[in-house]
Amino acid sequence: MIFESHAHYDDSAFDEDREEILGKCREQGISSIVNVSASLKSVKTTLALAEAYDFIYGAVGIHPDEVGELNEENFSWLKEMCRHPKAVAVGEIGLDYYWDKEGHETQKYWFSRQLELAGELGLPVIIHSREAALDTLEVVQSAHKPGYKAVVHCFSYGPELAAEYLKLGYYIGVGGVVTFKNAKKLKEVVKLVPAERILLETDCPYLAPEPFRGKRNSSLNLLRVAEAVGQLKEMETEEVVRITQENAKRFYLNK
Image (cartoon, rainbow, N blue to C red; front, side):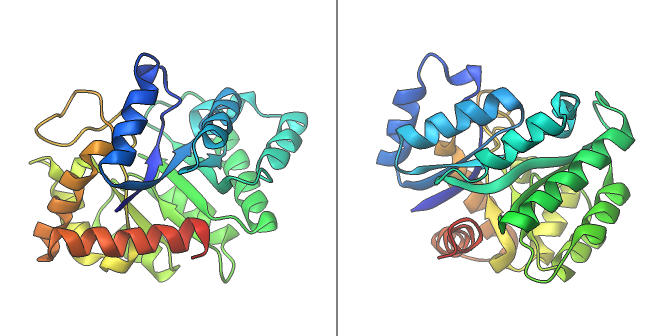
């Protein structure tokens, strides 16, 4: 059974066959899915999915590209949504200097506020960081407290930065990019990171693995990610699946 640690099934890319795809996921061994929000609207659609499917959980948070939506009133509402019975994390939150849709100081402010929120509620955090390596680490280190749980989703930096997050006890999210021929840094990271600190993810509908690169992704492709991780770590695919499922259950569900 595979635990999908990061998906976006409320995305419009699944509007025509969402129920069918989710049914196939359940039939083909996907034990649990964490659907991750990115905007105020997607918080609502994420929690609606979690309510509709017993094996789907929700992460509640505002992506750095969307933090312009936030104000104190919305933030109070966000806090209440984090108390939903099937909300298992705050995310995805962080910094994105690639698209640069919001000013860097605005991004850092709301990243810090959402980290504080997670700490207050005792929830783990899903961190998004793109072309913002040092600033992300700086904000995280400032907010970090003993027992704090976080995963750096879709990790895109090198082994040195991965080591800094491992020192904090954090997890590394690995998805379809690990199958790409040009993903040299990520392959090095996967070799470095203990299997007990890896979470399997798709970020679907984005980042489909080879040989489906460029097409719509889904959790049905997670086994390909597990196979790639196993090859890099010289482990059987089944063992990768078992360990990463235990990791995700411990991270999200405290099991």
